[in-house]
Length: 234
Length: 402
Ligand SMILES: Nc1ncnc2c1ncn2[C@@H]1O[C@H](COP(=O)(O)OP(=O)(O)OP(=O)(O)O)[C@@H](O)[C@H]1O
Ligand SMILES: [Mg+2]
Image (spheres, rainbow over the protein chains, first blue to last red):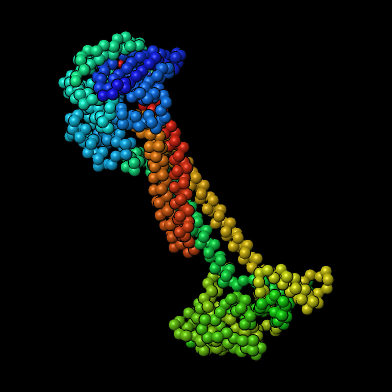
């Protein structure tokens, strides 16, 4: 492991333009995450967790402040470089799954590989492996609207993991799962983390947050607490 | 990538088909119009080259008889010796006096009504009309008014069938004529008549033995051919001067003949056909343009509809050019497939036009190529703007789009 932080955020703020004027969703956030960390982001609804994750995922840009990913300032990257980061380095699990409705689950999971220039046969093989990992091998040819919300959530996770990202960002990945399936997913996350993947996960549930080594609490766009809850596994 | 485009088009099958229809109609119209236009141009070129080149037609003018004026070609003011004199002018290749008519022709049990042209050997030169079997009659046949005939292919077919007509004797209005030769196939004339349905005999024989005339040695028309097209204006002046002198027409008096430049008439006919086919092509191209705009319109709708999908794709690593290509490919597939169907329909339509109306159509490789490249260009051109619009979307904005 290197000493370069995976994520280094300094003085970051994000304001949304609304009809009632500028709305500050994030306010002077500072956070450093080292390689191999497993961080749970918590906080009440509307506290800015998704906004924060979108910025971490290089989908959105901060209004003020800096964000360096692996030591590279994200603001200095062009659109193609950002796309490359989203494709190879970052795996993102959305709060609302964001699956493509017209495609089979296999094609959904394989989609990031298209943009990595991987052959069709290889894409399908890897997608099937990934679906097996999340327990959905038998549904590979179904469409997203033919499966349950929890199953969709698992497909979204499979898609985020298919390109073996070094950084996994998950916005409430267990929000739609019963506690047992949630635990299964968390076991998967634990395994990934022990392989060295850095994970940032948003959750409301204390049970889920317990899997992380560190918990960051947001309130009204600010970090109000940041504590280690568990020793980093060797 | 192709599979992606295919799936996207399949998801909106009806819309894709309707968009394609715009291209189908556009390309079909262009191909149909171009093949009809090119066919017409080809047909007129054939006709013109069959007519002969650098031709004047000299018509005898009006004569006044007791205040009644006949029209052009009405009187018999031109003579065979006028034609001989014109033939001597510089730049004149041939001058053939013509006495046209029609008559019932009989050979054995067969009889046939055909056009009988009395003229001189110069006529064959002027019309560029060779004899394919047997031989032509000569100046001495004209002088001594022998009963010899050259027959066109249609006439030969109708009278002789498979028999060789050369050397046989047929009867034109009861007079026996020896067939000296068979003329080359000529096809349709400018007036649409079958030129091969004719017989050519010496003009003297025609006047004395077949049609009879009040003015032997006088004719209503003379066909004149010049050596080149360049000398035509000059020849026109010298012919007019010569004839006015021979006919003793005083200065200021109207000529008793008129001269028409057939080649100029033919050229303007060819030109108007060309303009017509260009016009047809242009009108058809407008529908191609409309088809292209249809594609742009649908692609814009499609981009808007799929904004969220674009956002998702960007979020998992699609670059601008991936998105651009995806939408461009869709537009190109629509236009190329539409073009292909349009091509088939256009060719089918052209063939149908041919079988139904007998109009000549030409489906040239170049028109097919033009239609195809135009369609591909239309696809790229009208697909580019929507595709670029999609590619330039901001990932997070696109993801939030509902
Ligand atoms: N596009 C936007 N335009 C304007 N305001 C927004 C926009 N997105 C979020 N907000 C506001 O910013 C604040 C933070 O939103 P965010 O989605 O980050 O909350 P969250 O912590 O993820 O909430 P939840 O737990 O419900 O998902 C909210 O008050 C929200 O109303
Ligand atoms: Mg949220």
